[in-house]
Picture 1 (tube, protein in one colour):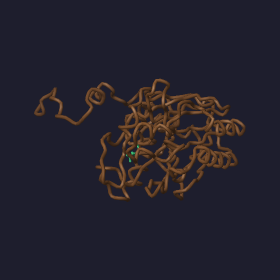
Picture 2 (tube, rainbow, N blue to C red):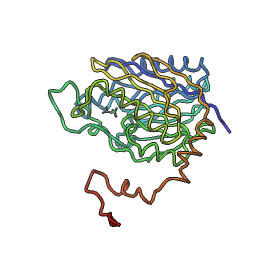
Picture 3 (cartoon, protein in one colour):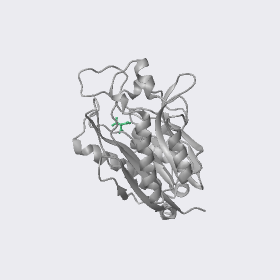
Picture 4 (cartoon, rainbow, N blue to C red):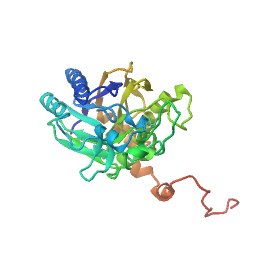
Length: 315
Ligand code: CDV
């Protein structure tokens, strides 16, 4: 049984619209090579890693098409697959996917150390809006450009380690980590793009980083998993995305975090066995969970009225 995994999060500094996919992939390979020198076995890249965060802009269908990948790997991305296989480093990569029948998803894949795709995820929680909100610093049009994910919260075997994937906004929803932990996930990997400005999302500037880290830490602790999160960070065509790429332990503690908003590798060798005390005590799911009392979570989507009481409060 594998007990150690050397995990790297590859933070990618901003990508301007002028940058080609070839240039971006070259940057990713540099990060991958740096991670390999620290013996990384798995490198986590961000959400929509290959392009600028295009959902900030209202684009026509023919303008947005260039941001989508119609196959994976393809000739732009093949050099990353080749170099990773040469170095025996696996990776998680977020990208915009267009299927052969024209559906578009915000997707991630898990690639093993031999270069084979062993996992796929399509983002379930799509934030933002689909209408054209003009006159703002930027928009957040994920609901316009992507369909909701349809592959569930899968857990995949990565050389003996059970890995779950999600993408950006998913990390803020507790159901995501729990769905994967119930399937034995030991590590949850995710990429993100968190802009400073999101229409209708009022938060103090400092809270952007706080709520990001809080979500990773709560997800890790409450589910006895490691969480590795890589952001696309810094400025893209003048629009700012937070940094804070990090690896979090099942204790909820941050093991390592990026110190910049640029291309940066953070490597941590994690001991997967260190999750065991949590799984056997406070978060012994089989002993303590009460799924019979949680049915409202899957029955109801939005906030509503209190459920009718099935007992008399005075008795
Ligand atoms: N790409 C994302 O999903 N971003 C969201 C917000 C900021 C819109 C996030 O939760 O970080």
